[in-house]
Length: 344
Image 1: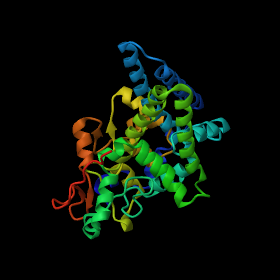
Image 2: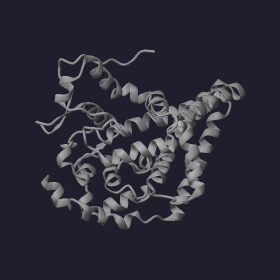
Image 3: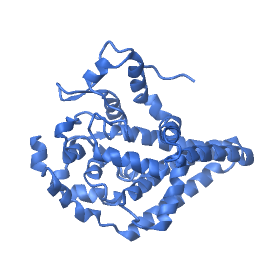
Image 4: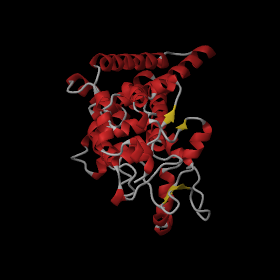
């Protein structure tokens, strides 16, 4: 076992120390949910307004950007509710987030099934594609066919994440689960159908520009950010991938889940999800208590950091394969054919 983890209090004792931070403030949960969705409605309303002057067009575009960022925060609320961290046993919250999940093509059941598996198996090579991005070792890469390598590289390509609306959400969380198990994942197919139905209705009744600024752009922005966050949370320099036979939940949380430094504004929009190592150690901690938990426990001070700065983003994208002998993530072998961005 890694000595750093032993010093941090490896095992159930460390998780137990986080339990006081799982106590929810119902008032805060209600307020954050209400205020966030009101802000989203306001931003969408501004983005939908007709524009004539250059200033109005600029304000409309800014409203779309803000709406996209707020959708990310709404997703964190949805995410925390599914974990049982906020608004536990609230039927109103259950209905709200069920509808929200459909609108963002992330049905609650599909999300819970894949995300709970991800939490229980973080930093394991086998099953890494469930609820996260597939990861293979250098040895596995050597045995893959050219077609398998291209698909692996395409899934992890920056353009795939930038177009997450279509690739990660519509296809990955909508179409694929439905085709895999139509009866079990009917809500996934319904979510895609609902999305395209709303697209048609908005264009028909309100016009293409309203659809672009008040519907498509906010979702596309939010889903691109979400797709990258999914990736960088478990693909960063200095992360650890453990052998299945010696896998440790605590070590996976603390050393295979990122700490992403953010300023106050982005911390607000992302619901403190940058403190991902704390969240993975105990997903019952409400998002608004994650900073408190990290500050209150010396064991949770991160040994690694990343951020949304260009250099750190580039460094995360450079992590391609796990090299068991080197004990670190590495890039593709130099003989690998470069995967170029897909063309329209």
